[in-house]
Amino acid sequence: MSQDFDTSYDVIVIGSGASGLSCAVRAAKNGLSCALLEKEAQTGGSSNFAEGHAAFESDEQAKRGIVVTKGQAFDTYLDYSHWRANPSLVTRFVDNAATTVKIMRDEIGAVYEDVTVTALDQPGELVTWHLVEGEIAKLIELLEADARRRGVDIFLGTTATEILKDGAGKVVGLVARDSDGQTVRLGAKAVVVASGGYANNPEMIDRYTRFDQVGAKLINVGGPGNTGDGIKMVLAAGGSEHPSIGTLLLFPLMRDKTITSHTNATGMQPYFWLDANGKRFINEAVGLNFGNAGDVVAGLPGSFYWLVMDSATIRHLVEDGNEVGLGIYVRNHEKMVRLPDEIAADAVDPDRPNVQSADTVEELAAKIGLDPAVVRAEVDTYNRYCADGQDPKFHKPAKFLLAVAEPPFYAIKMETGIMVSMGALLVDERWRCLTKQGQPIPGLYSVGCDAGGLFGESYSLPIPGSANGFALTSGWLTADDIAERIAAGEL
Ligand SMILES: Cc1cc2nc3c(=O)[nH]c(=O)nc-3n(C[C@H](O)[C@H](O)[C@H](O)COP(=O)(O)OP(=O)(O)OC[C@H]3O[C@@H](n4cnc5c(N)ncnc54)[C@H](O)[C@@H]3O)c2cc1C
Image (tube, rainbow, N blue to C red; front, side):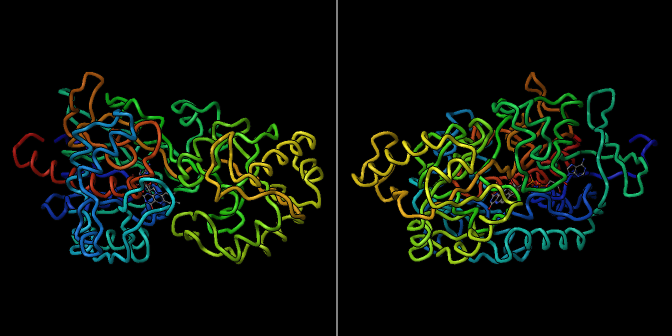
């Protein structure tokens, strides 16, 4: 290896989320020397916000009597992606995800408190969401401790900037900016790009996604460091884009509200939604799959909608509970007891124009900038559907048809939140980065949200925990591949 390097390792991992830490821990366990670079001051990235991860035929499912076969998972991924997913990659993930559960529990110390779904009423959702005590943030803590114990060098505040190759096209290391702002050159037999996608890069969002100029409008709730660095570095090193590079995990979200807010969760309920023209535009039951709902809202004029409801609906939410929750942050069928106080305070807060109330529908419409006559007509039509128990326009189930009749009336503005981007780089089923011609670049890997091949053009919420499950599983499998190739003298 070149003398130009400040120091050298067998493996260098870029990014310390679920995928990067899983890879680093396993690399060290496999006897490889390993450095983990993280540009933020702490580990975890977007993984710190996740709640659970997907697995199939795991012992945690078995002991709870839950049956989700690998075949079911495979079929769902392929079908949901319209067969754009990479079948071999899907198989490798699906086959190994249950082992991830074992590793995280038996070797790392995770405790699984439940295996469940995200939305009880979502048709066809598989019971794959393995919830970890303390959520994935706790698992990150455990993984980091294990990595340090095994001798992984973790460099925080250190940003990888360039991947280096030799004359034969093999990866030999990388350049990074360390926590003192100094440029360092690190040698490596393999580099694993685990930088978590580009959810916090509006310019890349506009370049890659099918939505028109939404980058600046999206509200990022994930890690600040997810700016697509790894994707750019791999492309510069000869890698290529996966056709589904534009896939995002979006969801309806209030600006300036946390995802635990009851007003925010109310805005996602499948009741009565109006677009920027004051028109009802969809079967609001799309909200049972927040990923699909996010895709819908991103594509609307202005990338927002208004949920309009009456006081009887608020009573229903408080007394009977919501129709759909938001992850573990607001539970399914939770009684929305904080809603009346929260929404009353928001509605009179001049700093919160995204919540309004009024005694008449027309007055409410005027307050939110919609044509009162248009909104009145939409409400009248919708109330007729509610009385009939049938929605001939969008065929929403009758149980979600709640009239907008009892004053005062409320409106909540829902914009578009982004959790992560997914599926950027072309990789094979060993997570090796491929050139446009489909050739692996020796020593270059991409895992987690930087790697394409699991999704089509939207996130597969019917298999909850896919992103994190894929991140954790791709990490350790990649470390195994690297160890095998180093042992074989290939790297
Ligand atoms: C609110 C929320 C809830 C979620 N809930 C779930 C869930 O329950 N289940 C699920 O499956 N998924 C969930 N997700 C998605 C999930 O968290 C991620 O998809 C997954 O964990 C990503 O892991 P990763 O390792 O690819 O990326 P990350 O965890 O984002 O890690 C990438 C890391 O790379 C670092 N980095 C970037 N560039 C560089 C660079 N140049 N040099 C060094 N470091 C760099 C970043 O700072 C970051 O720390 C959720 C996401 C959010 C935001």
